[in-house]
Image (cartoon, rainbow, N blue to C red; front, side, top):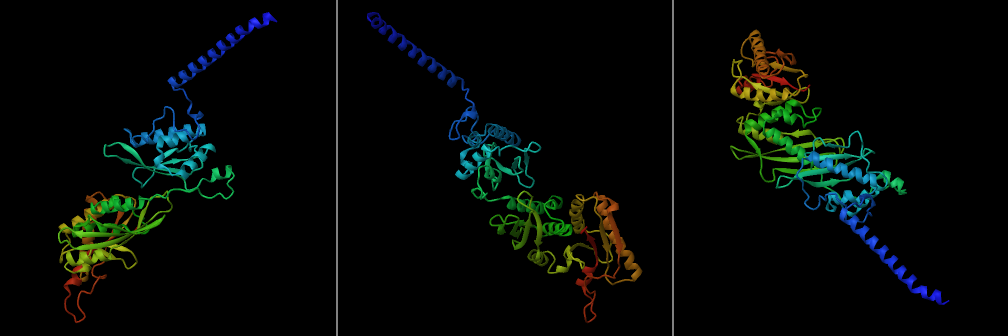
Length: 435
């Protein structure tokens, strides 16, 4: 009994030494892991604010990289988030300020159900018609849109992130039987405004070819477009610096705009209205209607001395618009004015080299029928020659002379007097560009 009692202090002392050794080893191991920063991001909880060694874009919100490089980095973070089934590193990388609370929850559900998996055939791409907008395409073909912008320092940063409107796959997997779209912070879609501004910039720059890429040519004819550029050039119009563009309506797939213009020379105001549409939210906007009535009225009064029939844009009896250029009395040669007009037409035609167009020549009623027939064809030939010299394939063009048989206006008044305005409108060549 005495021997057992004598061993108790030794047992207690040994136990204390063992406990101290265990605590010391645990402390050393913890310090080593912290110092080496070897924490696996996938082991972080979804509420953690620490994303290990990943860079947090929200700290500076801008990077020294090209848009392609920045989107590529975001792709890599998404791949990691999907693999770990943890959206928090992606949320922290992009910046929580870009998301509402419901959007953060949506991303977490996507990650937890493998909904952040990217489409391997087309993981990311630039969105056509949207400057600096990129799409990350998920495996289910839904898209996350990321709008970038350049900061004052010249670096790129994220401007806006738009998540899919609904998370249907996740809803099914998480038992959301109602399958309702998840709440999402509304974001103003600037793409319609951007498309209109691009179109106006092209028109005011007399670049009919660039403007032609932004129209729906089944709704707006090339003749209307070329005529609009000619009117801008001759009328010397410019968009008002303040309140020059006013939105009339803006829906998901259609928009209407009122464009306010001022003549640089006279200061007079004029207006046009433009309608644009798109097939769906992933499609680019296209101009589908241009109302020129007010602009043509101002143009006729200021440039044509009130003679609206001398306009470069005339109505085709078969529908649509036709371009018209005019000739002096008994002349077949092009004037300086008509050469400027045809230069605009040539630029537009170069974008559709496979198309055909018809050039018809016309005269007033002075002179014999054979003479007028010959003169009208010569006028059409001069137009074709100029377009050919400016890069248009001669095989694209067909010419015909009608002489005095198709006047736009009467050559004489009802009382039989001569009508100078009527004769001037009839000395013309018409270019049919509606293919």
